[in-house]
Image (tube, rainbow, N blue to C red; front, side, top):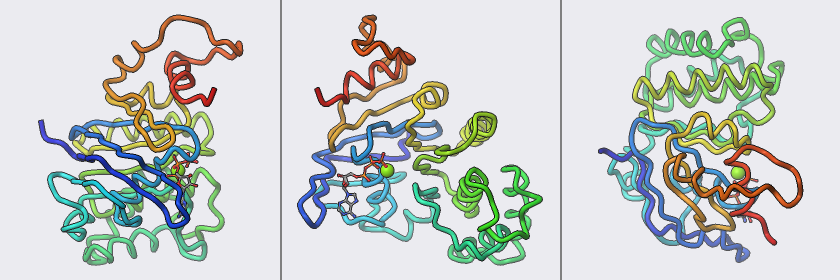
Length: 252
Ligand SMILES: Nc1ncnc2c1ncn2[C@@H]1O[C@H](COP(=O)(O)OP(=O)(O)OP(=O)(O)O)[C@@H](O)[C@H]1O
Ligand SMILES: [Mg+2]
């Protein structure tokens, strides 16, 4: 089967000395949703930064659909859509213009970009906000606008860094449906989230990273099978995935 992403022995040392990645290897099969999980500071956004060319790696190799992201950044960029962890659009711009502008970076003419943008805003429930400045959107709406923007150039590989942070329960569920529909269309999704039930519901494969190292990876069934059936010591019982996660990433 074709792979959307192959990461080999990736290392990152930031200026200042933080070893954010200590030799990470990961494979994301094409056409599915892959969850990258880990506590705050584990290295998830650093990995995403390197895949998208925003962060320079120290060592290792990253290929997106067989393209080395360092050797052919432009080709890789057209395949990738990024919805980053931070809200980063111009708050004075209107959603429709944000999308059409973004399309321009990929050489898509306005005439083609406008109907595409309208469709995305419609699909993400933002049609009635298209001409309001971004500043006036709610937190959850801003996230959805970022997803629409990531999709405007029709990438094969969508990277979502905590897309549902601060999104309410009902909207989160509708986003799950939307992401499921995208994978059915053949788009590969790499998702980070701190909502473990979200990962459990959506992901076929999962990797758990802690302090710059992968501590578990496999199919969701394989990861859930790491659960030993014991009840948590602290008495806070979550789902099965949460128990496995806590066991693999706790500092004690
Ligand atoms: N630009 C930077 N300069 C220096 N250190 C950085 C930089 N960006 C991240 N780090 C450090 O690298 C480590 C990994 O951070 P990263 O943002 O990749 O974690 P994360 O898994 O995305 O965490 P979170 O769940 O909180 O978003 C942390 O120790 C962080 O402080
Ligand atoms: Mg992060």
